[in-house]
Amino acid sequence: MFRNAIVRLPSENFADGLTSGKLGKPTYRKALEQHAAYSVALQRCGLELLALPPDSQHPDSTFVEDPAIVTSRSAILTRPGATSRQGEVPGIREALARFFREFHQIEPPGTLDGGDICEAENRFFIGLSQRTNEEGARQLAEFLARDGFTSSIVDIRGIRSVLHLKSGIAYIGENHLVTMEAMADLPHFRNYVRIRVKPEESYAANCVRVNDFVLLPAGRPHVEAALKERGYKTVPLDISEFEKMDGGLSCLSLRF
Ligand code: GLY
Image (cartoon, rainbow, N blue to C red):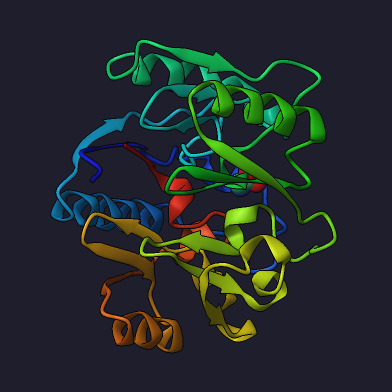
């Protein structure tokens, strides 16, 4: 069960953040509305929300999942792979200090984005990506092992269509993974029940289990139907403006 979530409001210059830009420029007002609806959804799932103020020094800072990883035992501060995002870490540390006493920190030359880390009960999948390097993955695996978790490294550098590991897979409990086709047959995932996402709905592979619900991007009817068929209660959310900035549902909050 999660009890808390941290989010950060998008800043006015949110559209200046990093993006592959395939979907056009986001509208700030719409992003604020979508962020508000996302925040309400988290609260309806039973979470107490800490909403951090916008940080215009860091236009990508609304994607709070990347500068930290939180487990049931500790908080790990990352060293984001994009240099423009490395300054997001102190602000997240300050917010997490209300909840965690113990911190680990990824150190140079390691780089790691929280979006590359997928927790599946006591096992963590660590994606090697455009943002997370071998050294970052090694350091994280060591911190997790110290805390009693196992981990395995999943190299997704050959899958150019995704930014992060969690752009392509989500663990939703009960041994179920939601996965994009390109990741579904990776050997790491063979012991899971896999809900395969068709290429046209691939963005919905980034969905999030929050207590009794699965939040997923709106307008992906096949994924939603597959989740419902397996008994999951779904909450579709329109996050089109964040998709334009290569962000997903999971990146918009830290849940613990
Ligand atoms: N815009 C999110 C990222 O590239 O990190």
